[in-house]
View 1 (tube, rainbow over the protein chains, first blue to last red):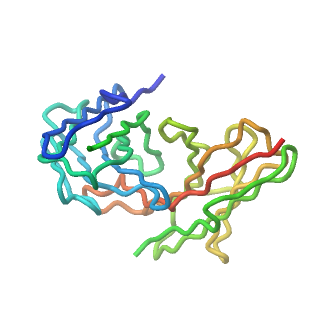
View 2: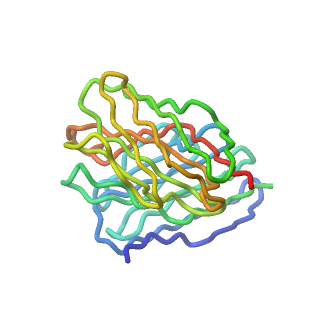
Length: 114
Length: 118
């Protein structure tokens, strides 16, 4: 059974803290994605990566950075958390090459910044 | 530029009634289209997808969707709603051609929350 896991389901942090969200996939997928989900706004792409050590900005990269040192792991970093980064964060992965394939999602991390 | 519009942020139906969730897209190339479902406090799960071939696509849990190129639509239907169908549903479109590193990207609609009344 394919799997995308995220390090925490719920996280509470304080303003100004550095926050790491971890995502691991066991499907040997090349592509990995970080989204944030907010009510009424749907899913918005923060960053994506199509290879180890490669990263591309999505639609809303400001205030975030990412790291992909290994193929199976994609980390989202909030350098200095702010209250407007309170959100649900979803990680996804997909294989390269076959453009018919869908993205597989993790369960999400609900982050609250106080 | 591609975009996805889901009509109705909330839809409420009675148990046993028809479910119809609307999705329209804009794309300058043949699209690949997806419907995902999200149950409370969970990630997204694929319901069905249209790539090429038959325009009526069947998915899991009795859902189906029809790709209508002339109407640029990909509406999701289920003949008889069940309480367990209460969830949020997302329509997504993907470019039908590769363009470098973004070949895996999807564009999502804002979602439709489905409520099912007993």
